[in-house]
Image (cartoon, rainbow, N blue to C red; front, side, top):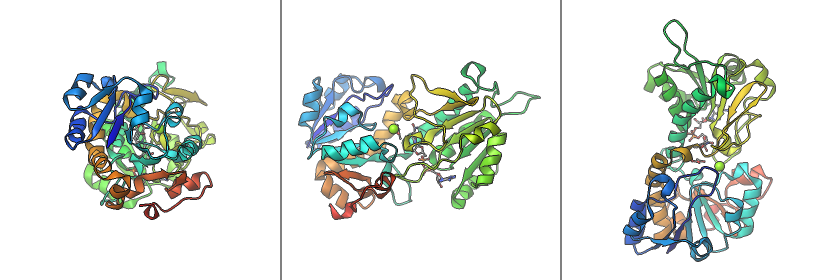
Length: 370
Ligand SMILES: NC(=O)C1=CN([C@@H]2O[C@H](COP(=O)(O)OP(=O)(O)OC[C@H]3O[C@@H](n4cnc5c(N)ncnc54)[C@H](O)[C@@H]3O)[C@@H](O)[C@H]2O)C=CC1
Ligand SMILES: CC(=O)C(=O)O
Ligand SMILES: [Mg+2]
């Protein structure tokens, strides 16, 4: 199969969808792997590393996209990339469509088959292609939040660990999944006082057991969120309803109850964000202030630590990329009931119900297409 790996063009996105190690695995199976010149640079992989792995370098973006049967990417296609997609091509990448109607309609119009990393599932009920980046983003959320608490960033001037004689800062994490656990773990490591809210008691049990009560676990209700808003210095938004737009858990009116200069880090921003006042930001300008509250809403947090993230991402995606290349999308999805929910758009149709519901569109059961 003809595989293309473009250089990512989203603002400050330094990851690449395939490491040279991954390129070698595909090339030795007889696939033609074309990597855009410079695609791996931001993640510390030289063009010569890809050549040595059996990939071909391509400088011309039109040729790269035009010849490809399978396109491997990291971030959702940007408008100029959507314009390059055509019927018969398969795109495998993060899509987060429920947050982006224009992108959804663009992909439908392209006719291409679009498989999202974030809706592939596993036997344990997890999201194995989202988890590695959620681990990264969860860990980064506390770094970002601690920095945003500094006065020069508009923050309240609280140092999360405190110092002897001065109490530590309070961190609340809403959503105790992969992002949430990793954020809570980093906050604990810094010495902050940490609470985690989740709707899933089973998940709170896991966290309680794993951290032996060192973080408070709280069932997520409107009352619990009200209390978190009043008392926290830093709130991390880490909820997910797979494939769907994130619920808005903190409204603008509630910001008035927060301590001035407190910080909201909305990791769930890629699914639209879980705070009413969240809007996507980039690493170039990651924060803004609303009603005295600092918001950090970067939709591609892992892009900033591209070396670690690229390796973690491709470790997870490679077996699926190999299946797509070896078998074609239809048989790869038909053979694997956990890969099948990755299909979001095919030949103009939406195949993921939560995405269709977000925009009042019809969806087609992906099982009927394979
Ligand atoms: N901004 C970025 O760069 C990145 C964003 N993400 C995003 O972070 C979000 C979280 O991802 P994961 O942790 O992997 O998901 P996950 O599925 O592991 O965890 C989500 C948790 O939210 C809980 N939840 C759902 N509704 C809730 C509510 N109303 N109150 C409290 N908890 C609730 C669920 O029970 C679950 O435990 C996703 O939107 C994901 O796309 C992930 C990686 C990078
Ligand atoms: C999950 C996601 O959106 C990212 O890693 O950028
Ligand atoms: Mg995004």
